[in-house]
Image 1 (cartoon, rainbow, N blue to C red):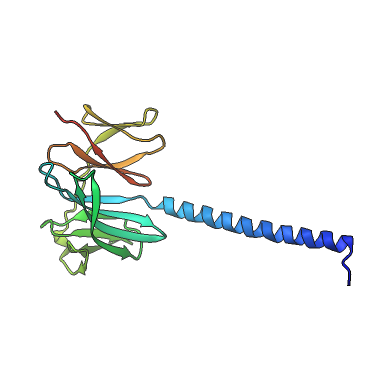
Image 2: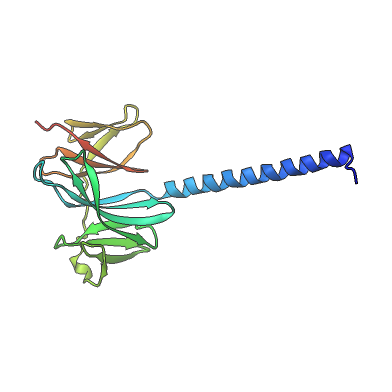
Length: 197
């Protein structure tokens, strides 16, 4: 049976329509994933500050990666271009609202769904009395930020240049002398080294 010209046109229109629907579905899915990834800002906590160039700082960092809530402990190598060495990693069930240090500095507290949970240094969940959590964990450093120039200023005398559109949400000192900083932005983190001399 031979196909008429009208039937051919209808077939091509239908094929084009379904291809268009598939492309729209993929674009929508990608856009929704991007939106979800941007909904979760990174959180960080310094476990150990660096005393000198040979002493590496340790941090705990929460990030939303590949549709997973990841909590990881890292050692940052100062002598190796600030390379992050992963010490421990766990996947959380939901995004934490806040992370806080423990009084003994051996582990961290994670607040999710209005409930605090304690994790040891190796990020194992453990039972621990809540009074060991440091309630005022504002370990961040005050800073000012100029949106137009994308410059973050610490204590009115040291500056860190960020990329345009990167808005800082937190600043943590990684060294006792204030020469290495962890800048937390809405989407990622950045290590900044400044000359304090």
